[in-house]
Each structure stands twice: as C-alpha cells, then as structure tokens.
Amino acid sequence: MKRTISLNGSVQKDLKKIIQAVSEIKYAHPTKSVSLTFSSNESISQNRYSEHVEISRVKRYSELKLADNGLEKQRSVLFIAGTGTVGSEILRQLAENGYEDFNPAIIGVCNSKKAVWNSNGFEKHQLLNPFEADEINKVDWDQIISRIINIEVALKIFVDATGSSQVSDIYETLLENNVSVVTPNKLANSGKLSRFKKLHSLTGSKTFYKYETTAGAGLPIINTIRNLRLTGDSVSKISGVLSGTMTYIFEAIQNGVSFSEAVKKAAEKGYSEPDPRDDLSGEDVARKFLILSRVAGYEIEREDLIVDNQTPAELRDIPLGEFFEKLPDYDKYWKEKTEEAHKNGDVLRYVGELKEGKIEVGVRAVPADSPLGNLRGTDNQVAIYTRYYQSPIIIQGPGAGKEVTAQGVIADIREIADSQ
Ligand SMILES: NC(=O)c1ccc[n+]([C@@H]2O[C@H](COP(=O)([O-])OP(=O)(O)OC[C@H]3O[C@@H](n4cnc5c(N)ncnc54)[C@H](OP(=O)(O)O)[C@@H]3O)[C@@H](O)[C@H]2O)c1
Image 1 (tube, rainbow, N blue to C red):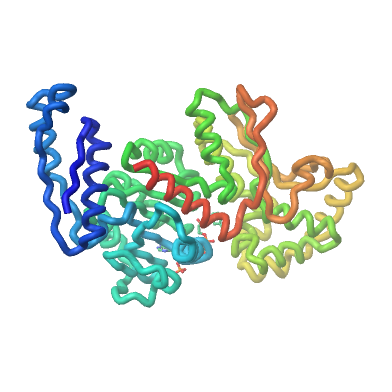
Image 2: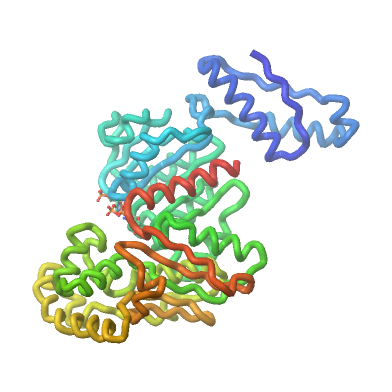
C-alpha cells in the first residue's frame, strides 16, 4: 500500500499529514512496518523552498518516531486519575457513547490506592470495571508521571478527576513535558495567582490546560469569559449563584423544612460535599469566583475575597457527627431569616459578585420573582457584564452532577484533540 502526500511547508500541518497517512496504513495493516520516502518535487521547490530548506526539513522529519504498539491509530491517549463520582462517569460515557471521529485510547486509570495500565488502550467494556485489568500497581506518582511522559504518541492528556492536591501538584511537570491536563479540580487554579499564571505559561500550540468544569460544572462559563477577553472585550462584573447546594437548602427551608433537616438531606442526596461545612463556609463558591475573575483577567488572591461563612464559629472544628447533632440549635435563626425575607417578597440565595476588581460571596435576599429568585434545585446562574454586553450574558443550568460534569470534561478533551 502506497500513499503519496505533498507537503506545504508548515511543520505542524505537514507532520499531521504524515502521521495521518502512516496511521491510515497502519490501521489497514497493523503488523506491517511503514517506511517514509521524501523527494523534492519540482513545483514545490520552484514555488516555495530553497534546496537547503528542503534538506533540513527532510532531516527533521527523518527523526520522527512512531509508536510501535498500535496506539498511533488513536488520535489521543488519556490517563484518568480518580474513579469516584466524576471519574467513573467519564469512563462510563467514554465506554458507552459512540463518538464520531473521536476514539481516544485510555491507557491508564488510578484512584488513591491502585493504578491500572493497558498500553494498547482499554477495550470499552473494561472501562466500566478498570480495576479488573491485568496490570495493577500501587499508586506511585513518580512512576505514573514517568510512564505517561515516555509514551511516544503525538497527543497525551492527563485527566485529574480527584479533589486532591497531591494530584494537582503534578500539573507543572506534565505540562512541561507536553502532556495536556484537563480537570474539574479547583485546587490548582484557586491557589496562588503566581501558580495560576505559571500553569498557563506552560501551555502552547501542542500542550493545553483546560478546566471548564471547575465552575458551574458543564456550563460553558469559563470558555465564554475567555473568548470575550480574547476578542478584545473586558469583563466589568460577574454575579450569580454558583452553589446549587445552598439553593436547595434555602428552598427546603422556604417549604417548611428545618435548617438542620435541609442540610442533612442535602448531604444524604449527595448534593453537598460529604462534609456540608465545605458548602456552608462559602469556600467552594469563593474558589469558583476566584477562578472566573482570574480568567477574566483580574489579579486577585484568595485573601482578597470577602466570604460570609454560614457555619457557626463553634461548629467549625468539631467532628462531623457532633456538627449534625448541634445543627438544630440554629433552626430558629434560619426560620426567622427566611420569614423576614418572605415578608418583603424575597428569597434567600448564596450569591457571589465580582465588581470593580473585588469579590464578595454571601447570603443575600433577592426578589422571589427575579431570575435568581426563580432558580430551582441545584441550578446555577451567572450573569456576565462586559464593555459590549452591558445587558449581561446569562448562563443558567445544572451546576453540579456527575453526568454534566463528566460531559464537560470530555468536551475539554475533545477540544484539545480537535485542535491537533
Ligand atoms: N461531583 C460533582 O458534581 C462535581 C462537579 C464539578 C466539579 N467536581 C470536582 O471533581 C473532582 C472529583 O469529584 P468527585 O465528586 O468525583 O469526588 P469523589 O467521588 O470523592 O472521587 C474522588 C476520586 O479521586 C480519588 N483520589 C483522591 N485522592 C487521590 C490521590 N491522591 N491519588 C489518586 N486518586 C485520588 C479517589 O480515590 P478513592 O476511590 O481511592 O477514594 C476517588 O476515586 C473534585 O475536584 C470536585 O470538586 C465535582
């Protein structure tokens, strides 16, 4: 089988053409080796290149290494860390959805205890129970990093579906070694501003860092803000509700459920973090607003935020069981606060706002018939005001949940794969 392709001088596009042609041959004849022959075509030389450039290009291309294990026919290679709520749903969607033109090879998966590998890519059915694979190791991050870095394929993507700082701490090493990173984990972007900048400085035309799902899960908030900024607009204000958990709790109190019961139910249904104090403290919302403001170009540190912590001071540092036992002491306070808002035609919402470079996050009474007052369940809503959009862009929809979060992560992966 012989394929003839002509090159046009763009190294990136030419390499893509070569890889595609080789992949097609390997796909049809997986066991045959493929050789590349370069010849200087008269019309190309006359039109665009000197002989010298042609020769140096040939030398460079001749160094091209191709993997020998069948992976080259895949457009992208993934390693997925975290097999909890989001990670297992990513695996399920990758296994069960038939994506046209998109067939990534998942070569490794890990949780906090085990790592499994399949250097040819797991079969779809194996993704549903990855830890039944043959090659199971203890989690050793140095080994995982080195193994991913040394795989010889054009596009490698590391997916961090954990909430762990141990995992988010390896992003720099991966990006420095041309491994793209996709994550719903907020930790890296909501730490020091210098780190946020460093991570972005390590990206390029082949290496990407994507985190759309760190605020509003699958809702396209981060990409929208980024695109507005890239096209010369400037964001003046971002406001809204980025905590579905708190909306759920306030709605339940409005319907006559006590505060303590509402918090317990939110935890039981998996709407809140396992420890609901992470939601009540406002930390989760604060981190999301911090990320949005940085994407919008504001240089803000976590200490600059004004955050209204709803966990009473005396309940902040006690064991979770004791926290739930003492929570009914605060039912009266929340009942009265809710009734007072109701008298004025308002409802309570946990609202965040970035305005004039400052972020405030806390409980506000908003008109019951306003867009924020009308939010239901775990929906989020964000209004983005810019120089051109003085009537804001409003993005609303489910801001948590495994399906939409996993879908958002896969959309980030696809965007990277499609840009190659
Ligand atoms: N759930 C949502 O709706 C949602 C929405 C948006 C963003 N997020 C973000 O998505 C991430 C995952 O959330 P989740 O709800 O899936 O959490 P989860 O159910 O608690 O799962 C976390 C997974 O990460 C693994 N893990 C933890 N530390 C690790 C380590 N050091 N090395 C390797 N694996 C480790 C855990 O391993 P074990 O199984 O061994 O414990 C588990 O498999 C979090 O950052 C969260 O904030 C979640």
